[in-house]
Amino acid sequence: MELMQWFFMGIIFTLSVFALAWLSMIVKLEWYTWAGLITGIVMVLFGIGWAGASFLEGIAQSGALGLIVFSGSGVVMMVLIWRHLVAPKLVEKVG
Image (tube, rainbow, N blue to C red; front, side, top):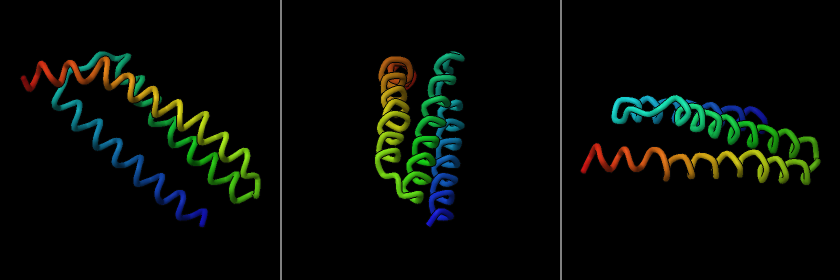
């Protein structure tokens, strides 16, 4: 089961790298936007790893808290950065 968790985390990481590479070809973003997006991705992956390890150890409360605190805040960070810093540049590039 633990190997499957690492496999899926590797898939998510690879897809996020490809998505960021595609985004870098489409839009010119500032350094703090890239730092925020990368930090959000790392936080989501850390939360998944934390939760998986905690669930395998039998400590479900720690796993749920890791998902909420780390992955949740990473998703919120990425959504806010996307809406306020990336989406306006995509609209002006396309429109």
